[in-house]
Every structure is written in structure tokens, then in C-alpha cells.
Length: 497
Ligand SMILES: *[C@@H]1O[C@H](CO)[C@@H](O)[C@H](O)[C@H]1NC(C)=O
Ligand SMILES: *[C@@H]1O[C@H](CO)[C@@H](O)[C@H](O)[C@H]1NC(C)=O
Ligand SMILES: *[C@@H]1O[C@H](CO)[C@@H](O)[C@H](O)[C@H]1NC(C)=O
Ligand SMILES: *[C@@H]1O[C@H](CO)[C@@H](O)[C@H](O)[C@H]1NC(C)=O
Ligand SMILES: *[C@@H]1O[C@H](CO)[C@@H](O)[C@H](O)[C@H]1NC(C)=O
Ligand SMILES: *[C@@H]1O[C@H](CO)[C@@H](O)[C@H](O)[C@H]1NC(C)=O
Ligand SMILES: *[C@@H]1O[C@H](CO)[C@@H](O)[C@H](O)[C@H]1NC(C)=O
Ligand SMILES: *[C@@H]1O[C@H](CO)[C@@H](O)[C@H](O)[C@H]1NC(C)=O
Image (cartoon, rainbow, N blue to C red; front, side, top):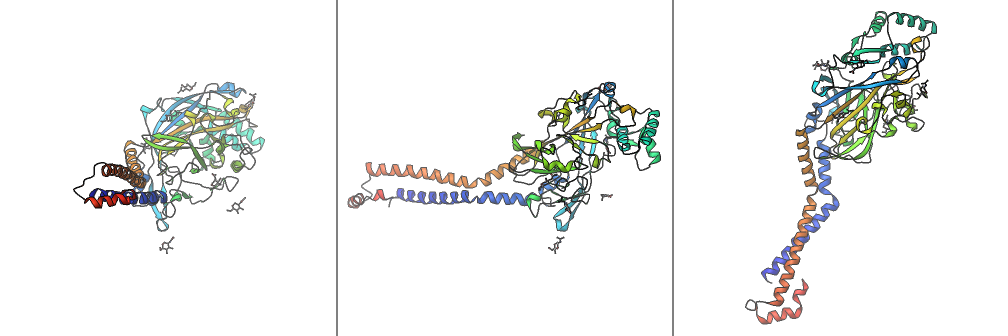
């Protein structure tokens, strides 16, 4: 046998092995399975996991933008007309939300944590100075008290109404943005406080919310099952809420929105428990997006999340008392706002029944500015960009005994909305890109083997053809005895390979 044919043999053998092993690995997905199980192990909330530090002190900056609806025609509205509003803002605050009092429970399969949020004003991202800018909006304490009194006798209501009138309290109030957000001493609440000390004298949408947490959370670490990574086990010691009217609505589902399990697929629904909405919501896949060079899946709340129970019966549990339902796109949250007639929706009543939008002059809902979405890197489940938008409204209607409300047409009146955003920081993004590259390389390693096998196969074919040409054309008689050569030709040796 010649040196050349020996090389051909060797190449053939190596090539066959590469192809067999490579194809077997591709078919069995050994490397992919390996790296996926590695991800499932690594992505947990345990002391040694890399995710843990980022979970305790999330590096991406979170910005909270507040927009207010400045009422331009209060007199027209009180006389039975249509209210007109003008959006003002944003007033932007940087949010700091570290996890504190982190304690492992039950052999490290669960952990307890608090998540206090601190807000620091960012003038350069704001439209004005909140301490100076005046906003005219609904006098929420007054409306809340009126609505509370609705269940009392007409006589008592009339008395209280006359007393409130003598204090000069109106349905609309003009206050600075800072006061409406962070609290002011309300004259009416001060009077109530002197009779019922448990009622706070101060009112503010974010009163006592700076530096405080939204409850005690116990999370699953995800060590037992990667699908449970970051899922809420209990909130304030509860597994279920008690204020909604069905067991399904009372469920505390999913995570708190900061983390999601790895290996997300496009067909699943992601659940988030939103303590500020007092309920769980779900998000569904919308499209593929790219953020800072990272491929991500966009998830957003589908239309059915806030849909009228007539169209989506599973929402019937959010009507409290049972059967007392509002329309599509609005959620009454009185149950967890001490009975105040507070309603949440998306900004400008995005995705809501047009009757709510048309009832107010100056609203123009659009997807771009008003949708809530979450962009997740699907392999790791890490949120790359998040944008949470929600609006706070109050129900204004005629209340017997309060002459000021006599002509009011019942309206879900918008007060303000928020745009809370976070985008992965550049450092984390480049770490993420490197990590994803490694994952891709490792899981595609078998393809590399197959590729090498194919290259060798090509080399083999070339070698073989050239060899054949040489042997047929100008063989080298001095190397082999003539007879032997003839014999080989005679037996068709070369055609046997
Ligand atoms: C959290 O920890 C601090 C001290 O580290 C303690 O003062 C505080 O009471 C703890 N909070 C709760 C709710 O346990
Ligand atoms: C903790 O682990 C020990 C030993 O592995 C086991 O006996 C015990 O039941 C576990 N406790 C809990 C709360 O899971
Ligand atoms: C919130 O508290 C922090 C620290 O306690 C303070 O720096 C910040 O100014 C406060 N924010 C507001 C809006 O009062
Ligand atoms: C809101 O409306 C009031 C009353 O019209 C006005 O005085 C105030 O300047 C407005 N606020 C802003 C920020 O434009
Ligand atoms: C709701 O759950 C409670 C206890 O978890 C149970 O007793 C009750 O029957 C359930 N109600 C419905 C309608 O399933
Ligand atoms: C909670 O999750 C279950 C399925 O796990 C679902 O049926 C239920 O509707 C969810 N509840 C809410 C309020 O999202
Ligand atoms: C919300 O924030 C994002 C990112 O900061 C910004 O692009 C968007 O315009 C904001 N939305 C509104 C309604 O201003
Ligand atoms: C009251 O509001 C409803 C819708 O919210 C509207 O159809 C009706 O025309 C309004 N009535 C008056 C007098 O404005």
C-alpha cells in the first residue's frame, strides 16, 4: 500500500468518526441539554449564584416618571359638562430598590426579603419643578369621604355636607405636584383626624411611600425547580389575597417582575404579582426585539387582562362586590385602598372601552407611549428592558346630600399616570452578550464536529480523485515491480476503495 492511499484511509476513518459522533451529538442534543441544565443550576437565588448579587442590588437604573392631568374646566364639569384635561410632566425620580433583610428559609429553598423603594428627584429629566408647578386635580380626600358617607343616612350626609361646605372644601383642588405626590396636611382629613385618630391628617399619592416597602415577600429560590425561580411563595404571610370575589382572582401568581425563570418560550404566559395593583397579571409574547445588541422576546399584557367579564368570564372575580363590574380596561381597586373609589387603568385609558376615553377631553391613547411591556432575554430569563405604565383614576359621581355634585355625570376621572422604565446598563449588557456567545458556542459544538467531518470528507474526495488520476496517468514503475502493478490493475484494486 502506498503512503498516499494510507493517508486516504486515515482521512476516511477520521472523517467517518467525526461525522458519526457529530451527528449523534446533534441528534441527542447532548451539549444543549448540558448547558441548559447548567443554566437551570446557576440561575437561582442562592448565595453562590452569580444572579444573587444582581438580584439584591439591581444595577440598571430605574426611572419613575409622573404625569398629571391638569383640569382646565372644573366649572363646566361641575355643571354637567365634559371635563377637559391637559397632561403635564414628566416629573422624574430615580428609584433605588435594594433587597434588604434577606433571610434564607426552609433549608435554603425559599428566601425572605423586603424591597424598599427610595425616590430621588432628577431635574434634568423633568419638565418642571414639582415644588413650584401647580396642578389642579380632583380633591381625592373629599371624594373618598363623600363616597364613604354614601352608606350613611341622608340626614347625616346633609349635616356633614354643610359642615364641609363651611370649611370651603371644593371638588377640585390646586396643589403643587410635590404636595399631591409626597403629601400635604389636608384640612378635611385634619378634622376627621381629631375625631378618628387612626385617620392620617396627611394626604399624598405617594405619602409614606418613600423608603418603605410594599410588604414582606417570601420567594422560591428555584433550586428545586427552575420554573419556580423568583416565584412568590407568600406576600405578607398570605398565599392568597382575600379581597377579590373568586379564588382564581385571589391567587398570588408568578414573580414580582424583577426576575423570570431561564429558557423562556414564546408560547408561555408569564405571571407577575403587582402589589400596587393588588392583583396578579399575565403577559404574553408579542414579538422579537433587540436591545443593546441582545436578542429579546417582548412580553406585554394581552387585551384580556383588563377585559370586561362579559367578554372574559375569568375576570368576574375582580368585580367587588361580585357582579358589580366596570367596563373593559379599568380595574376598581377600592378593596385595597381603604374603600376609596380608586380605579387603575393603562395611561389615557389605552386598551379600554372608548366610552371612558370619550368622556374626557384631551386624552389620546396610543400603543407607543402607553403600553406596558417587558423585554426578556429568553435563554437566561433576564429582563433587558422594562416599561410599566399605569394610570390612577377616581370615580366621580353624584352623591345625594352633596349639592356640589348634583350635576356631575358619573365619570372615571384620570388623575395621573406613571412611566416606570429600566434598561439594562452597558456593563451588564456586555457581560450578557459574552455569556450568550459562550452558550451559543458550546451548544453548537457538535455542529463544529460535523462541519469538520464534512471538510475532511471533501478533502478525501479530492485526494481520492487526484490519486486515481495519478495512478491511471503517470504511475511510477520504479517503485513497484511491474507484475505486481499489473496484478493490481487486473483485480481492479483501486476501484475497491
Ligand atoms: C430589617 O432589618 C433591620 C435591621 O437590619 C431591622 O431593624 C428591621 O426591623 C427589619 N425589618 C423587618 C420587617 O424585619
Ligand atoms: C431540611 O433538610 C433536612 C436534611 O436534609 C431534612 O431532614 C429537613 O426535613 C429539611 N427541612 C425542611 C423544612 O425542608
Ligand atoms: C426620599 O428619601 C430620600 C432619602 O431618605 C431623599 O434623599 C429623597 O429626597 C426623598 N424623596 C422625596 C421625593 O422626598
Ligand atoms: C395647571 O392648571 C392651572 C390652572 O389653570 C395653572 O395655574 C397651572 O399653571 C397649570 N399647571 C401647569 C404645570 O401647567
Ligand atoms: C376557594 O378556596 C377555598 C379554600 O382555599 C375553598 O374552601 C373554596 O371552596 C374555594 N371556592 C371555590 C369557588 O372554589
Ligand atoms: C393564576 O394562575 C392560574 C394558573 O396557574 C390561573 O388560572 C389564574 O387565572 C391566575 N390568576 C391571576 C389573577 O392571574
Ligand atoms: C417613558 O419612558 C421611555 C423611556 O424613558 C420613553 O421613551 C417614553 O417616551 C416615556 N413615555 C412617555 C409617555 O413619555
Ligand atoms: C354622561 O356620560 C355618558 C358616558 O359616560 C354619556 O353617554 C352621556 O352623554 C353623558 N351625559 C351628559 C349630560 O353629558
